[in-house]
Image 1 (cartoon, one colour):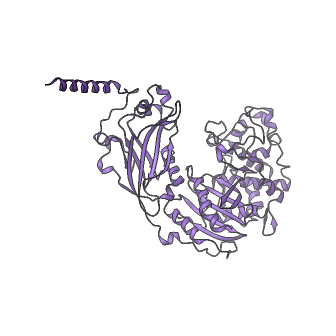
Image 2: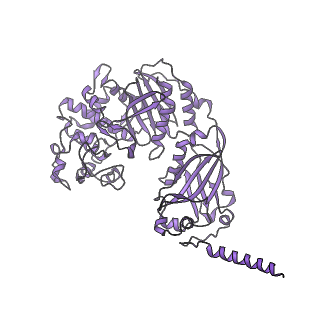
Image 3: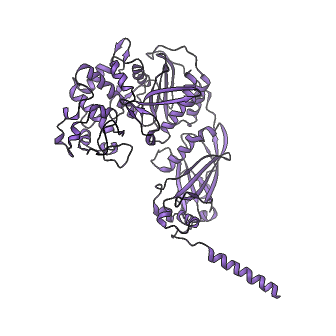
Length: 551
């Protein structure tokens, strides 16, 4: 062997040895990769009908295509060559495990090679020990069981933020890419860990599912003959039929006091009693206005001390004595309660297991950092207290009084209250009505409290209810305002602003009362606890309903 060849071999061996010594070793021990299918697919995302354990996945379980409809589930498994923490460690060897754990996965969704949505997964999605160890990420993306899990919400966000629009009728390719990211000292995204493609088939809706539904006789409403853009409503119907707008049960539009559109979906119909969740809170506000007019309540400025011996409850503070009905109606009381904070003592989820919901509310501490009419925090238990005050003071109790003073004047005979453990109508929400009857409630406020010539709710109370009493915190619900159990915001379409007061409830349930348009719009839905519920209702209004029936 010549000296030159020896030198070349020696140099090559030195280079290999240098490269080997320069490799960054793992900072944590990853789970061993033992399954043959894992070895064969490292760096690949595969799709499945369910989250099967890695050791049980076979080639026959792999899904190559999915028909997008409400009956189909979809899961994914990302086969990785290492754990997330070790991938992050390669990006920043100087960081500790705890610092690396402040990052997570970045998900990228492409449809037909176009980036639709990208999200740096919140650091809290997935326990630290899983970030450190697992080498296969198995998650559900679509599930008919509607489990509470970050992965389904992630996929739903992708669909709402462009997925539905991109997935037109026909065949498409969905590609997912998975990368690591770190946040210390600044956000940095690594290379692709794994990726995979799936064929998505969107079938055309049947003609009958797209067509405008004829309004049958007996609605109880005069029928409108005004023109509107039927193509837009048919396009909305098609998206509902294709499950792009999910779990919608009805859409009703009243224009100039007449029934213009009445549509039902997913097996529901005119006589369905819809559970609107927190839309029902606003009915307590309506009854309160009537009770004040009738003299059973002096005014909304009355305090809890007028109705309860507050020293008999836990955590007494003189501040409780001065909490007003108005502060409960405007979600601005000083109770230590916030339904938007899972850790809040007064969160509604802590109330429901209790034997006495009113006691739960009145036992709460006050929050010394809050000021009445200054701090807005959604407080369901406070509206339960409003209902209890009404039940104490109106003749025959809330159930009978609401029937005589509100429902009967509106011609509403089919409805169903939920009840508290003390069998008081629950004003937390959930009073069930037909969609056409929710429309009556909305039109009542549109008419300044008048129904068929009779003043059902005082005009002054309607005005207070639809006044901007509180600014909504933008980090919780976005820009807008709050009245007496009514929300306020503005849709902008082209050069036209559509300011609306509305009731809203879990699942995407809405009663919209437009300020400067002769419109009342009802959407009922059963997308309970789904992240897409409210955004899809907004999308229906913004892109279909308002352009079709507005100016």
